[in-house]
Length: 514
Image 1: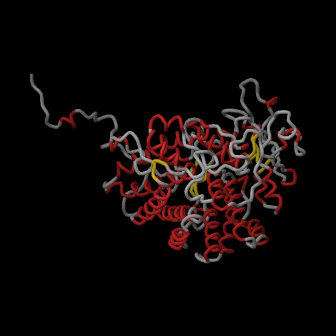
Image 2: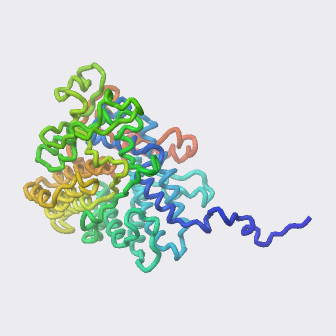
Image 3: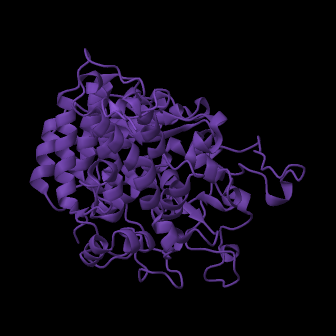
């Protein structure tokens, strides 16, 4: 018979459980940083997009496992859609939540702005992989009540990302809130600024084929403000105790948690030969026998034990050719290749690189120095190309010690190598070093993006029956038909029809102008 309406919302809000008004969004930021390194679902998209596709297409890795489709330019739609599926759910949603929940809240000023920078990092990879993607409306269903999201043009996305990072960095304030959820830089805003400027550099250089003026202008803005040493490297240190949730994503795949990768995935001979050809000290990251053979698996618990007697002698390292399988056709059978003896004789990543509690590299000083070397080579801006190149090569050698002390190469050894191999080959030499560095960082997403932009190094495509690209190296991942055609049909169809070259592995994103 009686009721009240005064303070209705307050009375009906659970004071114990967390909600938008009493939840600390710093917790979400830790989640957003972690999920950028890969899905909590057994490294789902890391396995498929970073390793199966990007890693093998770029001939950093090689595999004879049948489902490693990227090695042979085969199209497996449920693999090429993997990054889209997980990124929007596990990366975009939490970062958009943080940005929205902290908007116009002075107590979260710095969190709001580092989240804006991280949001750009997330969307940059998404648009680099697919092209036009939902951006301005993505993740806003809860806030806007819109359950479909338009695909923004990649050109518009890039222009907005550049502005967002620049604007967010400008208002970072050491006197304001500490970002307690920051597991990368622990709320060190000077490092965040150098990270932001290095990210701007990466974004700007992506435009060299389509918008030379914008690329050049942003390089001029960030020159002298990017990362200054390996101490600025952005990486996430994983935790073994959290199982799939917190363990290193590359390790979960390459240690064979979900298949036979521990035995049948190796460094590509293209990569190993590149290191050998110049006596590069990074050849020490390759090993000849890292894991036990299938017959040596511990049958008592089914586990795959590490072999402690792995070999790091550069003289015996051997890469596995791409485009091979375990069938009998001598044109494609790995057993028919002159290099074949046994699978353990092919080189694998050093165990220190794929520890379960190891690290995932996100953006590095070596990368920024090599991009500055390219900018100086192209336009004569931002300092000496030779100096930036030497800095990048040295940092790309010494950063390996951040994985594990067993991979440490001394500054003196790096200096000797860099001095003996100065910049004489222009953009192709810079591109080769960038490729080597990102391969050793296991960031094959970036290896692929930079190769598509520059064409370096000059990789020889594999020829394998049934490939989806007429024997050319793929240029993008197709849109996820199953998901988008049913839930976002109108926008999906328009975006799919607009892809230059078609919505397939041979199509091109906007900045990859032919």
